[in-house]
Image (cartoon, rainbow, N blue to C red; front, side, top):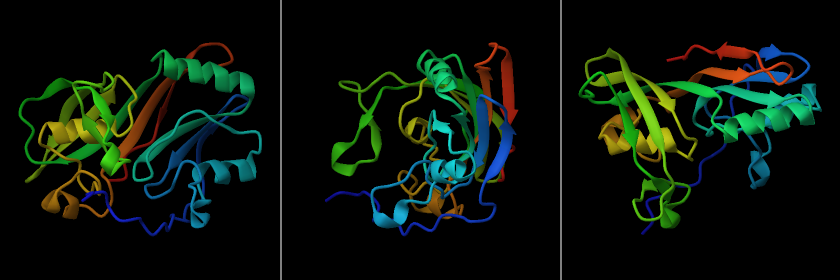
Length: 222
């Protein structure tokens, strides 16, 4: 029997409807809320998404990357095709730096480290992913402890690769699932938060117009 969660009742947050962190001729930097899809889903009721909302105000805006529905934080879109190609190459060549904040269950041993575990789709339970040393794709995540709470550790996570569910599976592999994770967190860790406690807090990229290094920040709401 599959242990994939039952189909969710999609009720995307409406307020604020769209949060713009930065806009210029090439870039549109947005803050996505937890619970909002980046792109429209196939079901009829899943058309409301960050991309559609952005295009309502900026029809020329083009998708560059995505965040999971349950993850909040910074998403960058391109305002023209040339900028989209430029940003796409930065993602492909790992020229960008993304920093996430997460609250995980338990006390993480040590103060920092790197997780190097290959990941692959768990096909019987998709969209879940799993560690797979045979057919998995290389995946690395740097982690650093920010604070320690009674039963929780607050971490800064820096993905060196961009695999689906990478941070969620890597933290699970350490025995410290992210709080509120409906896919990977067991009972107490799931119940400890009313949303996935994972937030894309910072993004560094080279501006498509002149290559200058830009950093955008969106403080974690938890």
